[in-house]
Image (cartoon, rainbow, N blue to C red):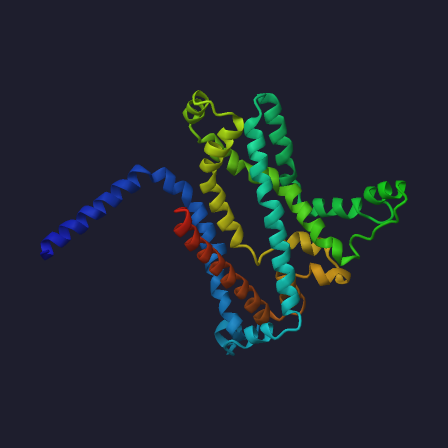
Length: 314
């Protein structure tokens, strides 16, 4: 291709881009605040990750701090609490995935089967409400209801002759409480995505199935679930990316040293090391480790999903 032809192609492309920008200018203007937010609060702070490889000194700053390579990563892997932190983080997230992931799907399917629109709207609204309750309030409710002296749960247990249970002093109960609160607070709101996906299924498919004699169960198995599966896979991939992340606010409000055995996770460990012990480099190294593992999990799961089901994030 000659130089003049290349110039014509570039000019043509630039004109096409300009026309696209002018045509959709209001969409790009609306998107601009989101872009600015991500640049300022998501991408620009990534520069600070370099302190994971430095002996960071607040006075000297990032440019003046000593480089130490992978010292803090090695220190974390050799930490006596490493296995406990990994175990607790993974177990809590696996429990949340097993019990918390299917419930929004089931809830959406149940809502989809309700024919009375008034009852359907009321039910959906009630299921969404916990999502809008502050995590601080939710944890306060849990501490109050499960109090060994005045909690309603222990009061009811005492009616059956059962001694008071110290839920927040016994490590065995923490994971169940955490998962239950997460499901109660988030299931209704998470179901919105699946309800939207169900709304996109063509009614003609159900009409054709009825003509062929398919009952409600067969319609669910052969139309609803297959149509919903791409959304389920995408949501599962996104959940797998957060397998080393937990609801930090909820755990920090509920846990105490007596239940560290099951309640102490990577996020709370980073908080203690970074903000309480002011060991910023070490805390950043642990946080970076979480991010890298999360990326590997999402990339690996996305690759397998693309090979098996042809559905993927990218």
